[in-house]
Image 1 (tube, rainbow, N blue to C red):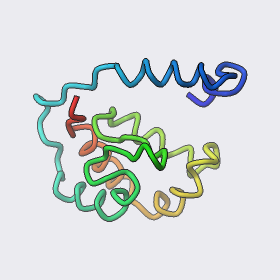
Image 2 (cartoon, rainbow, N blue to C red):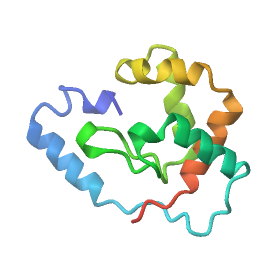
Image 3 (cartoon, helix red, strand yellow):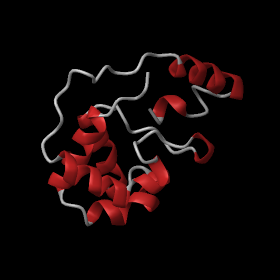
Length: 123
């Protein structure tokens, strides 16, 4: 997404506002029929301890702090977004996440991502 949100593609604030308005009206994923992921209780605890302060108790994000919503995102997408921050390819994210991600086992990251993916977004 970074490539498409640079000043070459979205050079004016109205362009950003237009894209934001469009995306905000897209329907969320329907996760009502998905089974609870394995290790859901452990994943919820890990999330509460490591992520909830910024991303909200149920992954709703915080618009005022520009913290993205995680609830209802695809599991693979969530995992894929974390790796570049440890490899110094996502500068805005790496400072806040690198130490946390590096000390968290991959299976725990996958469990939290699966738990978040299964959460309803309220849409």
